[in-house]
Amino acid sequence: MHTEHPKHRTLRSPLLSAIAKRVRLLAPKRPPNIEDSRRLKQQIHDFATGGVVLFWQRQGIYAGAGFLCGFYYSWPLAAFCYLLVQTADLFDSAVCYRVINRTDHSLRYSHKLLKLLFLSNGLSAMSIATFTLLLARLEGPTEHFTSLFFLFAAGLFAAVNNHQIPQILALRLVTYGALFIFIPAYDIVTHTATFQSKMWMHFATSLFVLYFVLECSTIFLRMYQRTLDQLDDLRTERDRARESYEIKSQFVSVVSHELRTPLTSITGSLTLLRESDLSKNPESADRMLEIAHKNSKRLTKLINDLLDIQKMEARKMVYHLAPVDVQDLLDDALLSITPYADQFDISVRTIPSDVPLTIRADHERMMQVLDNLLSNAVKFSHAGGYVELGARLSDGCAVLEVRDYGIGIPDHSRHLVFDKFAQVDTSDSRNFDGTGLGLSIARQIVEDHGASIDFESAPGEGTRFFATFPLCDTDPESSGQNDTKRQAVRYDDA
Image 1 (cartoon, rainbow, N blue to C red):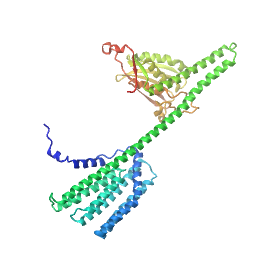
Image 2: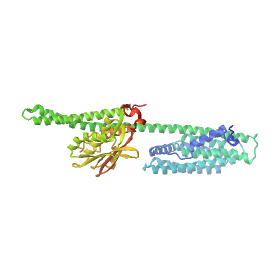
Image 3: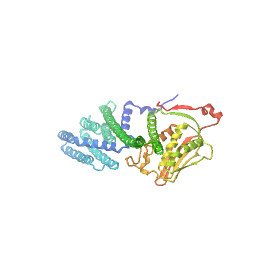
Image 4: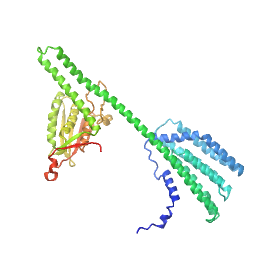
């Protein structure tokens, strides 16, 4: 039977547990991890703005408290405490104005201002605590209504107006809360009061009031944090809308360029055919038809790429998976790319694997991947150069590689390589044609196969793309019939 230690039971008083829970929320062991400098800037700006707006309200409270203390207790004490509180408040106001009028918006400067606010509010809290402590000493062993009410008002004021920065709110509440407990506890200890004494009732009442202040603080803190979260969500949606607009603008620029060029060639070829006497120059007619046919295929590829992107975004792409021999795949890709490479005076060399490699893949889609990688390598290679296509075994996986020795990819464009419609130069005068869809489609197909794709590049030295696939077990006893039958897989959303 499980028995609970008596010491643990005494620490689980509902009131003390609730207070401890609130204190842990306001003052966690670890400092808040504020990753977004914009959010921290917003917090300290809201805090400072509230401090400036409430300046005259605080002045009225200080003047009223000082007058009551002087009229009923001691004018010298009232004057001393008023000057002490005013000095701390003026310093705090100066820091708030510095925050509002800041010109340096870096994260480092935000942390510097946060430390200044922490210091100024710490001095302010200590001055108020000193005032109430001296006032409690003048009151003697009573219920300390005036001093505790001043503390209660200060704590409630902090809960309502200092919730923007949890660290500062915790600092004030810990200071006021400690004094809220110390004042009645000091009377109990110094006068050795019994449990039947009203001093114990005052002490218990102080705990309940302290709990109320902590509860109010957490409510306002959560409301403010929720507001910040909503603002962050709005900013995120705004950034997404802006990014979507930029992608659409880039899409219009790239696709219009890619459509205009082949359409112009097709229109020109057909116009010449219509206006020429085909019987006198049949070779010219054949050449015009070849140009029109070539550009028609280019348009077809563009439309197919757009349709593939749409399917992938909708998660409706269908893959027919089956064991694929990697060497056969490389040979097919070589035959497919050779006519295109010949147009650029580029030769394609294959580097076979030392061991047979088999992967489970959709052959047609893998041909699309290699065709996109190879055409990209050919396009960015120097005339008279060559491109390498190979495969190798690495860490139990099949690695397919396409290597060119062309212009390479600049470091500042690395993040654009696999993006949709990404072009280093999207202007009408750019040197290389393309929609910027090929590599994006290749990556999506590879990842849908449970594989990965990456690249290495150096400007002026070329680029190496490599895709890593898990090997397919071709042992009939372990793989069964699934390795010999094609399997259709649809990657839909769950």
